[in-house]
View 1 (cartoon, rainbow, N blue to C red):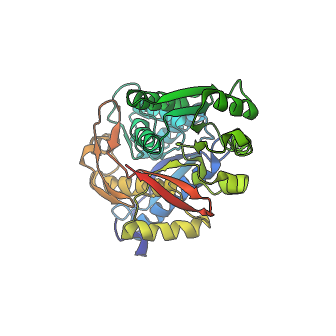
View 2: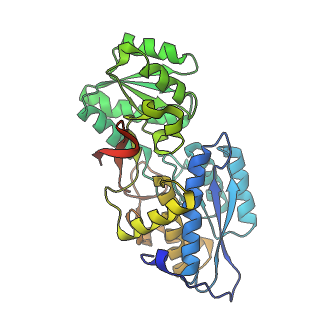
View 3: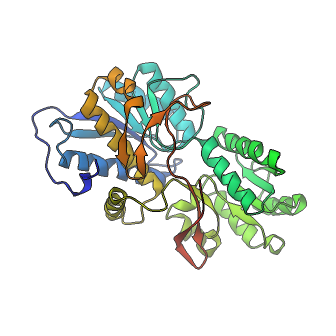
Length: 370
């Protein structure tokens, strides 16, 4: 795969397409910008696979379904894609949606390579049908907790909306911080206005506030309220789930959106393959590609290698996860069984804590690596 971006050979049209399904959030209430980045990576990699001869001369074809961040819609899409004869299903950004898709794929015996969702418990029971590229939430958020401690933040407030994903993140932070003398203060955003959040931060003497909420709202309103409260001039805001990664964050908040650290799954320096893919993604998106776009590309890179080696038999594809060794845009991808994680897991993608530079909000600063 290392030369795919520069190749230009069309596949021989001597067979029917090899089809894989793609689950992406493209409409609200899904995080549509993340979905478009994920889809851009998937589509670019499909183009490159086909320029490089396809799958044993057969063209690779992507069949896209919009999940709109709806678990029921995702499960129905998996049913449909299975009936349509997909060799495998890939994608998804939202963890609760990916969990529904993974459960359905497991039940149907359809291989599912999850691109971006991080919830540890992607399936209730261990399964051989599902593999994942994104790091497990427990791994990434522990690295974020180490960053908080290293920056001197022991009293951490979380402004959280109700969600399995946010609750899981809060638990990871608490379990990691408490033995090291840290405290996690939960602020229930069902009951608090942004102004009330500011009062609570003062009352609890919090030194950091983490935004475990949706974007643009209530995240934008909370950031603006905290930035304008003189009592909170020294507080650090963070967004471990990555809201500031995407281009729409900066226009929403301007300078207020800078210096809010988040998790990003990129290496400090891209490989030659990663750099070439990054250039092509930038052209396709007309914007800087997020780590989610690279996750999309790597998803198809892995599936293409598996399909070339195993063909389109679903059971053979699922059985091959432990044999994968693919050079992706962000490093060599291998899957393993990891304690507490029920799916085949890439252990681990590169992880950074970064923020937008206050002096130049379109530039990212790497603050911590794990």
